[in-house]
Image (tube, rainbow, N blue to C red; front, side, top):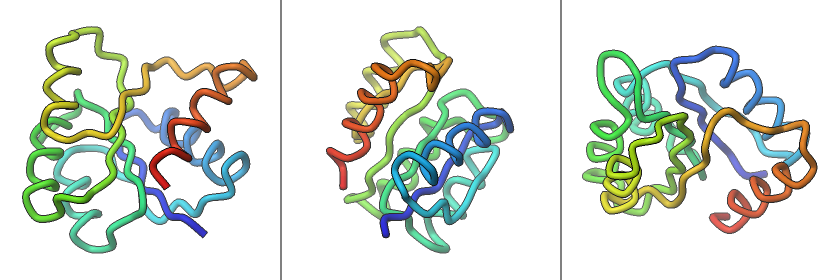
Length: 125
């Protein structure tokens, strides 16, 4: 079974994503974190198959965490999951090495949006 780590400063998003990964994609959520420091620690401790990472978080931003993780794990499969609308920041995350971008708020009640999300995640496995 594939594993995932979810890093977002919003508990409600972590709960939604955990339910989505476990119930819809049948993946195992091995860790959750609330900031960039936790993202790095999670990845060092037990690298997941996929990590979702918010960009705007306290202590260490998602961009900083992404850079740091990819320095020691260049093959990391990290998807940015963020409400940020700054295209330059999104482009920067993709340039650094994020494998995709998913916009919040999540539309998990929409079958079409769920299918798009499933395709993005499954493409990385």
